[in-house]
Image (cartoon, rainbow, N blue to C red; front, side, top):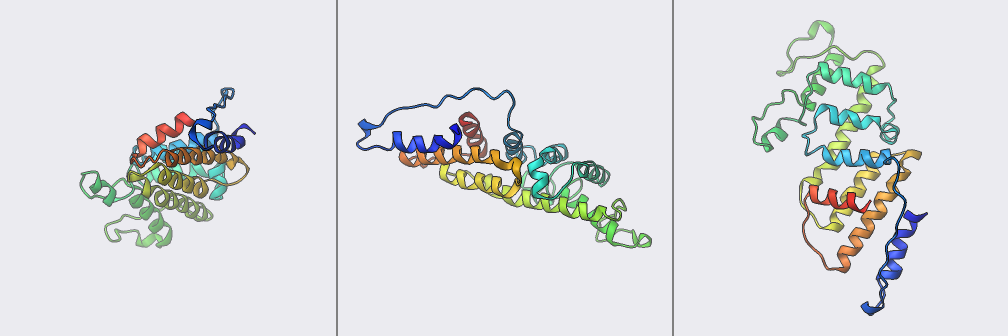
Length: 232
């Protein structure tokens, strides 16, 4: 109830004119004994670009029920995809292009795209044709219904990469509100995703305050993330 009322109270008490009629206020709520799993997972998503999409960090997102619900993955599926991608050599990085952007040689080795290509070829090609295909060694690890699990997991990874693409660029607070709300709407679903409302309301207030102050300062990802953490 308090979270739902926050934005309304801000509009009532902080938007009166003339300014000397505005009433300062602050909402104090008891500290949560444990962080909301969805909110903590959301911040782990925002940390992925800084962590170069490493294997452990990305797979840890599947511990969140709201993400599994969104992509129709089961709890046990995490172990399957972990084993497959470890065997396929995934360690960090999206692809060769991302490595090049980081000033490293443009090699696909140990990236998500290379590991995915190995698994897809291993499943699609007959066993007697498992030689190098355009420089990629097929890996025969996925069988039977595992193909459906792999497909849903690859949808999760590709959606995650796409929705995170805009956050590499600095932006104003209203721009960060739009970007971060898009992540919440795209990556979480089901009853457990209700906690996303808390984040959305905080972002709305932050963007409203920036607009009232005519603040057009450009924030990078780290600054925007820290500001949101403080607000929550």
